Length: 172
Image 1 (tube, rainbow, N blue to C red):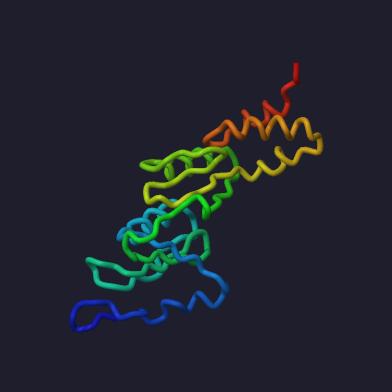
Image 2: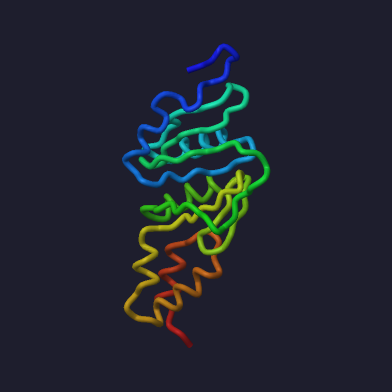
């Protein structure tokens, strides 16, 4: 709904309807590029879409979007607050090809961290994690698990073959 000044009504009709299915919806505070970030995120993940935009065409204020079936919000609130590693989104991956895909896309223009963590070009932190990681690090043999954990601590992008090789390595 748009008023006579060309601004979209706040809140748009139905904008918060999907929030009743989940008790908590994360809201990410961006300086002024929340729509750009949301469009980028929904382009990467299946079952993702932009659900609504509030504000004017040239200055969107709030973006409601869905990533992998879960609702999120992006707020263009200005430069007062920025992201930190204290909050991150975890991307579960079926195997190394998915890890490689999401790592390349999310880290482009951003910053690689350790142990599968990265910051995207908008400053939001992500963990790109193969589903097999729990099995490798949770090996019932504590020495195997310890070697795999040590190897992981040295990695940026997680490498399943290298983690398995580290677990399998025979100590001198």
